[in-house]
Length: 262
Image 1 (cartoon, rainbow, N blue to C red):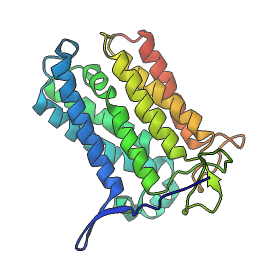
Image 2: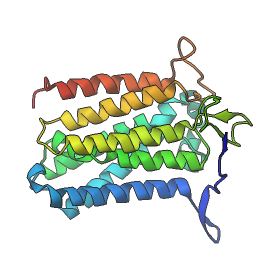
Image 3: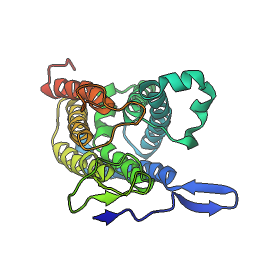
Image 4: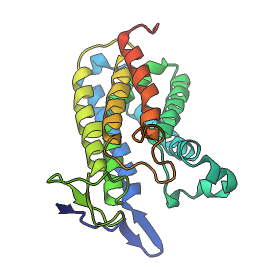
């Protein structure tokens, strides 16, 4: 049995200003994406659109970051607590209280990529496939932020790596946020980076990202405790995460099939 290290969620205190680890994880994620995309256009220019350069990537990160934050917050409001926020709309802006949804963030990033593609007169999947290769790195840092905050822990377990989280109880539990960090982050990044070493039809890389994330999330949902206000939605095991990931899986398979007209 392991015990969570009890990290202080605040990384830096600057007088009255508190910089939280979770916020820093977003910064680390977007910085890593920026560095990896610049590395890619230098290492394999033949696999990248000629319009990609450092300034364009900086603009892309801005669009993506704005979409991820706004979409993630609105997605949480709509998917997880619509009744509460309908009664307390002012609380929507209080992001310091927590509450972000990956699926909402994904929709926000898609909107941001569409606007960016239109601005540079590029096809949507030229942008989406470029971003999808490194998106798991952002997911990795996000899940590490969940781990530091002791949130999204799993069900009780007697496995050797089960961990006690003080925000839950005194039972050892699956460290489900670490499972997701490895599957959605490290493993999916390696698979996508390898897959993108060869030319692929438009949408194939984006499709593989959707399939990889959906499968990872669906698997971890079986050992992750669902949100208390939602609990299980069907059959005492189907969660909101399952339902939101299924369309991603189907869309990803469709994109990878090459049936979509390019």
